Length: 64
Image (tube, rainbow, N blue to C red; front, side):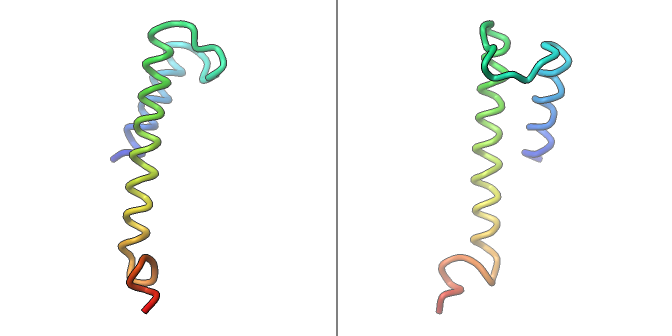
């Protein structure tokens, strides 16, 4: 779900601005797209880490 939301932000950002350049953020709309990207990227990274840690061959319980 998070990957779909992240992809949707990138598609909307590209369609409305015709750029994904983070160095040219000079409008409120571009800044909103940027922060949505940051939010979903961090959430996706956290979810992926939690998933990997829950696998039987990974995480704290695999060291026993």
